[in-house]
Picture 1 (cartoon, rainbow, N blue to C red):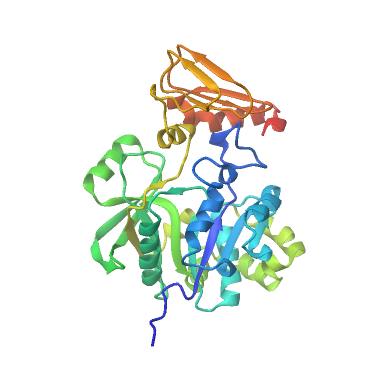
Picture 2 (picture 1 turned 90 degrees about the horizontal axis):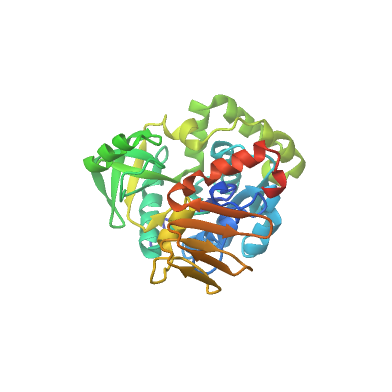
Length: 364
């Protein structure tokens, strides 16, 4: 008799609701980061789904996004059943979304296993990624147990959450499995340096695996009010009742799954992953990952960089010339032009907030 696959009851939940403000002006509310074609073939969202298909079929993949981009997401993912591409009527962070998804999966499959993945990350080692998912699903199959895919840190970084792990408890599919001791949100640089030097911390990239029933049990234990709201929404038809979903979903508290659940539970394990992961969090990261000319510029063919080094130019129509400048990001669209120091590209999101405050919503 053939051995049952660890993915037999696995359902992917792809989180595609972010706006990616740090990629303005290319990224907008109606064209967020996950719908940008920054690397390789297709958008980041399409690449995320493509990585899953060897393990989880389209009929068991859910995509949660916003109403603003629903049509474009459906166009990009024709293989996913339309009913499984869910447009949220309000932004409520990840906890309510995953609670809604858990009820939907549990309705279909009492043994359903949720594989939660962001839609806007780069993973350059897909075969290793598949092994990590196999190990994670095998570990999370036990009722009551949750798994975080922990990324092995390559540097002290203040932009990520960290997971403190105990000694290795075993292996699955060739991957090390650890008990998680503590979650820590983005630490200051000195603390991040200590974490990385200790060898006891992994990055939290927002990738989780658990049974749908396990997640709902944890909601009942640690977020009882939200658990009641989730049950009420499920009884009212869940995402299958557009009217009730639009009415009830905005009533949820805006809170991440990390704060709501993961930092509170005890039976949680981590798979230590080296999958070539990058969250592509700024234009500087895109620069680092892109091909460069002899002067370390990232630029289109229709451009000229004279005595210029380390610049990144993104333009669709205009011929861009730089003279005597270094380490700039220059991004041009029909209605906006961004010029910033490459090492300040993390602050583009702050510029977007300032534009919103100043009433320039048409640019967002």
